[in-house]
Image (cartoon, rainbow, N blue to C red):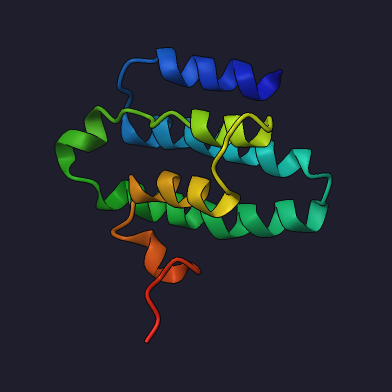
Length: 113
């Protein structure tokens, strides 16, 4: 229920300053990690992603820094809830493609050879 409420909040928000938008996005991810019940995984992912989110925010163009739209994590939510027909890999690649150029190049979907 917490994830559903958070996704609905994200989807209803107007653009925010980039740091606020990314904090909200990180809140979603942190909630997912905490739901695993694996404290080591949660600490590791938090330690790795906080600096990445910060660096991403600093690298944004000035106009985007002022008014950033948080991409809806609904596809991730639907996968977690078992309501997606996509694989975990397809779901995460779709999510990452909004922020990174061709994330599939690091996945099993990459062309080999």
